[in-house]
Length: 226
Image 1 (cartoon, rainbow, N blue to C red):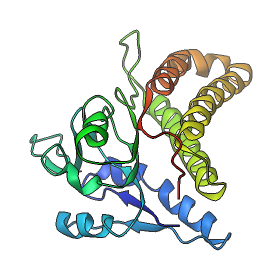
Image 2 (image 1 turned 60 degrees about the vertical axis):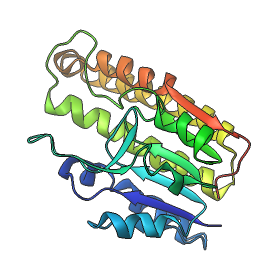
Image 3 (image 1 turned 180 degrees about the vertical axis):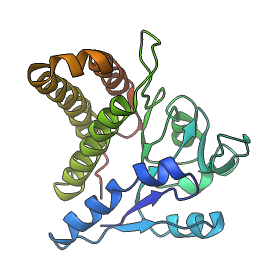
């Protein structure tokens, strides 16, 4: 088994979001499964380390054709980690991309032209926006963050531990995201109905189900997460 998690450290929000990678690695260690984490500010070292593993889990900002090493909201000064120009680093690799939008261009390109075995990604943003376009409160964002992080941690850990194929991973991740957000929202709705309405948690259900519905797998979905 050779699984590595690339956890972005050059963007503060993604650095915090990616903390669930430590939960995965620590829990797997108790089952005698060593899972490496790439947490480095140097792009060349990250790319070099990726070459030593079979399955790569990316936790980073993304766009349609890029996984980012550095993503700078303020100055729009981004540094790609992987895009079409160097997608060959994914040759013979199996990819799980917890990154916004990369299933639109990068995923299919990597599998069709760069020799990537299989690529699971998201067609659109892993978003926090409300469909009704009302402002998002801090509590709303915290609610969604917990939903996403808990689901990703639990399902990816199980996929590695139980050696799921990518088809099963995509299906169960979709189901888990949908189930988790509904159950957590219903619990708050019953116990704190005013709090639920004030923060618009009904919109959180729409956000997460949209993300779940846009999980895509390219390449050989029978490949095993290992």
